[in-house]
Length: 407
Length: 153
Image 1 (cartoon, rainbow over the protein chains, first blue to last red):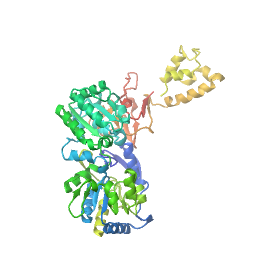
Image 2: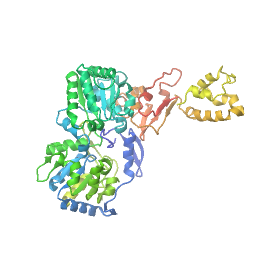
Image 3: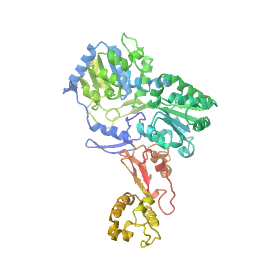
Image 4: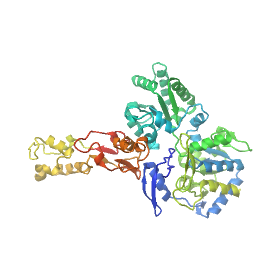
């Protein structure tokens, strides 16, 4: 049995067969995971400095030299690295006095902070499978982003207390700006919101729950939604980036909604984390520094603030190390542009826009396939995995340790 | 998926009864249910004026004739590999109550649907509730598909 690190569901029931250095047959892996497994054989990186192939030792030495001479380096990414690599990264940041940030500062961080501090109640996905009778996908489309979410946990499986499952006992509600693939599966409870209209929609639900007439949406449908929520015995909300980007500073509204729902019945929240170990990074940073992301170690002590997020630090740093992420493709243009102008060190198993633009490229083994480790699933469950392919490549953790030794 | 009316429009519409059925509409329904074959409509084959219609009809009928015994058609190019059908299929649930039924990938050979190489594949179609004379119109796999990758004729 292998574990898939293609998304944050970390599916544990994968049966993969490799022959002569190629994936020949694999069972239970979704299309996204299948692409991830096949990625081990295409477009792998080689050690490079300024676009020219060099030995691994000289690439590591050059990376150490860049980081050592930088006044305020930025260490960014970490969502596709194991907990062990992240711990090595924190040590490196402490030694360098660097700024450390994960992809969560652009994504689920604002919600994850509230989940990890206990302001918003959460649960595990196994609880969802066993007890949930209402699943709300808000601004998320698991059919596309986490293909096995519905079938493994949130809608179709038969749980301890939900033996009749989707046929009679479970309801799936989708709130989204478009009729996504998931919305097609629960057409009776699909609610379309205008882009940026999530806050208004939340206020409308709050109004319905308090017995008032909602101001937005189809009034009849909103009242039906209200009574469905009131009848729920055990509900789960899965907010995706759609909701986070739309709410921005109005996260208190979501807190209020969850608190109101919990006055009536039980409702838990699990953020739809994208990368396989983004939550792991947040939990580890919270444990070691007291903050989930955007931390600067300059001057010794850990300091947190928006000025230490990758968005701001990309403009003030003089070097950057990118690991387990492709910020030049994923981040807003201004930040990506600022990052691209820095001397970049990219540690990545596969070629990406970031490795193309990087000054130093260090190839690493793909975690989950070529190297083992521990990761945290989207609901906070720690999962340990072993490598399934033999490789000579170094893991992220080994590379970071060697860079640290060289500094 | 093509409907009986579309097939009817491609027939001679003369109700000549040479196929053994009273009307061309009945023959169209027979074609769709895979009880009749295109070749049984002799005027369509023999008369030259129907040549274009015959060509179109064969094109339309190709996917239906290639369907499995239960009429199940899988479009692998559309499949996400999400496994919703694997978990929802009542035969899978009965065969593996501790795996398929609770969302894990199936292990035994008794199941009908399973995900292999990132897409769904069907085996053991004789176990399907749509198979045989006592078939029921079960639609657990088609209703749970987010990408319309599974269809029944």
